[in-house]
Image (cartoon, rainbow, N blue to C red):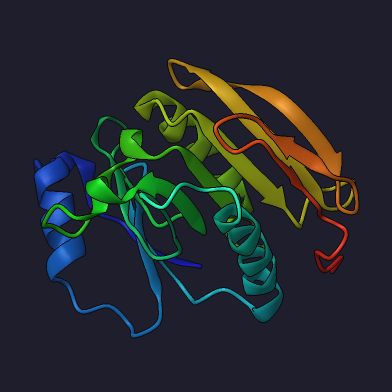
Length: 194
């Protein structure tokens, strides 16, 4: 992952970061996010990463009401944490996405899912959950393909400040239960192990 640093001391604020994020011409197919006030540009995810995301998305659609959507390229904003993220998946009421603009407030999301890549694992494990919790996202699912003890899945919930409580954790191959409003047993046995 390469990062373009936007100087904090130059008087730039959230609006300046968003304007730069929106107006710059970034490499086609790249994922451009603002993480802790730094604009990061990363390549599109690898095939196995996308395979995991697709399997989760397919299962989520089986339990969602018609007025909710699952998005892979929706930008969610957490201005208080200088964050503009493009989660691997975000579940959100469609009414939130119908508003004009290029992003939605993260707090409107019901569930955010991040699948780690070798280059972004630290952000998915530390920076993003802190921001999602601060925004009040009720559930954060971290699918960590690169965890040191082997691939794991952790469901976080009950956000307080910028901290989540671990609700459930398991290894790939074991099911993990998503609580209401999803009430879904997520089968991870088909996730690629490498």
